Image (cartoon, rainbow, N blue to C red; front, side):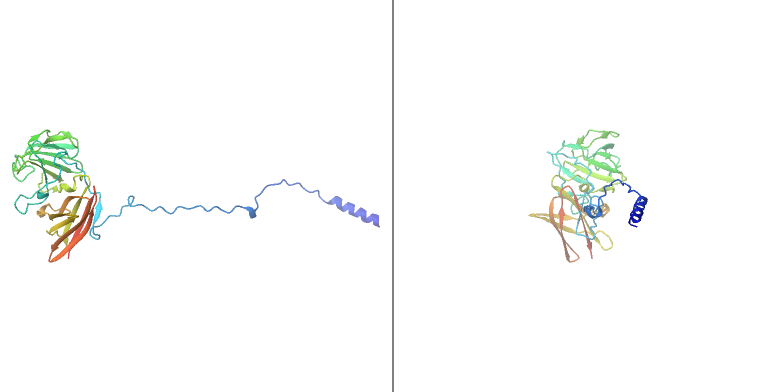
Length: 301
């Protein structure tokens, strides 16, 4: 019996399959998988003001500062007097004593060199005997008119000498003539204008102080004084800057009012604008930055 049992055990063992050898594969156990490294995800890009400029509205804020459109070099260069004459600014009549001013003046002696304010083409150089660009013959005397880009023109009047001729191409800074007192000039000076559109239209002029590149350390200020219907109003106002005070009138010739009714070049700094209108005092503090334009709008209630 015992032998029969041993024989049975032997036979069963012979029926069992031999173990299969499985090659070892190295798998990182999930228990030891490294934790994910926190990676900073950049936030959605925020556009900077230079990429998506938000227009400043001078109707809803005290003032706006912009790059302006200072595209013209001064026609008189140092060491000569390259400053605009303050007593007879654009659209001024000198309190009714003079013809409405369609440009600005640079007071200099006869023979002072006059330079092109920008690259362009001479479209007229000679005497205004036929009054093509002026209200009557010989008003400007000897003049030069230059066509520039964007339908802009510059006009140089009362010259004693003309160095260029019609059709000639000129470069910015090139000498084109000399200061004089021809035509209806009251003393030796350069009369300088900026026109846009129809150059032969005497009323197509723009305030040169908003187009001339400011001098070092200076900017420009443009002021609009209007009623609630958008009609420009005439006022006399003061500009106070540290220990200096400027007395300024809005444009005395309404026909020359375009987008503003007062404008001038000023030293960079903080200014107080004040004026009386309808028995009420209006005032505002504004900033003028070097090489830039400050725009201010007053709406009279």
